[in-house]
Length: 273
Image (cartoon, rainbow, N blue to C red):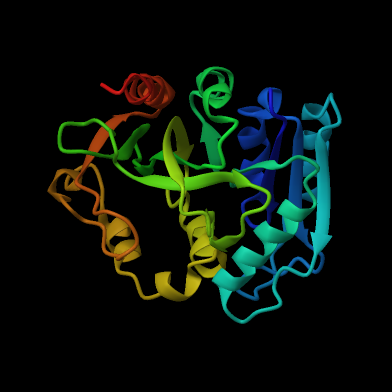
């Protein structure tokens, strides 16, 4: 079976990283983590995280010595997305395997066993970039419930897709999208915490990630702040940016049921139903 390298990022999202790695650690051969040497984000802002805690978590996870941390200058451009592209390509070049998977710190793989053990062997001999399905929580409510972005019928099929895997010979030219025109939709589902986070963490993300220039003017954040238990059903086709398809609707559930929902949806997507 073809060996797999993962690249991921350490920055303002560091607290999410250990949980992300746990969902794929057993299925890959190498994990290369990027960290700006000056603790400066792609958007040129200083960030910090509990480094002692993260190193301890990574040490606990890394029983097979798969994890390597690469430090460098990942804020050289005044354009955040250029720094995003540069860091991913820099980390890719430090991978020892030619099959490179890019998972961000706030992403948790839902059906990793199916994807890596059943799907990957079918396509490993082709130079194809893979796309995955995003499962996007939208907002935690005050009563232990959570809102999730879905279709009108409450399902996720083809709700939103992203690129995440490529061959080392290809070049990341916009986030995880590369110059490779050959892409395939994989059945992998990823729970992406994205903008579903407390206000202080959301502010950090909005001002520091690769799309920070565009996002600062996006009314999405004002809308999200006003959503609560009484008005969430009013949101229809409510995505305000031009990046990706519109979000049709929201589904409310207990947060304790979220993982079960994700697994059910992943099974539907894997079977093509």
